[in-house]
View 1: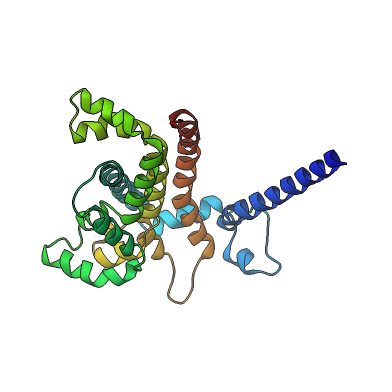
View 2 (view 1 turned 135 degrees about the vertical axis):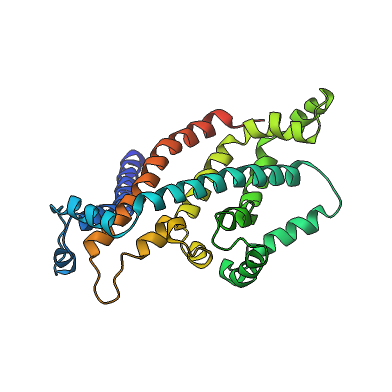
Length: 277
């Protein structure tokens, strides 16, 4: 009897997981379908749920209306540079908060956590004024440097470091003559790889999809990122939704491909990099 209920429970669980997978995947499928159809097919009722034959036409319209490849290169540069910088500074700060004692540590970390509760939109005006005063408006520095470190990344690395990095490893490193930075670089970073993989993916995707700050800070169309460039596909009186969806698909595919490759390393890193008592 118990075995029967266990089998039924397992069946229900798998069914719910399949529903969850379908709900998660359907928006991407719907995006792909819309990018292959005309606007009239997209807006009709009931909606067309099968692929059409307009994909290359829609992509060609995207390339004719905006400088997609220039925006793509700009976004790759900004996202990659920012993500690498975030990994370095957040891991360094998080490791320090987790494993070293210094005056004002609790107050400083509490202040850091408080900043997580403040909506990022509230900082746009003071951030823009500061960027303007130092002459960085319409530059890539304004997109990269203000986000070199963030409260979430520092908090994430601190929490992971406390659990994964044993104090005995740091004590052994000190006996070998390691200073604070070498403890971080030679001992901390190899153990933090799974946490860094998650933070890197999360940061890269967030910066890739950022729209509001690049829209505010950039004026030159040659420096626009993908999200700002794609917003130009929306017409004032009429919008070709097939073209818009094709542009969105082109901007989304690199993220899907990146996640497919990096997520495998992330999972294997969790299995190989965990520290056990």
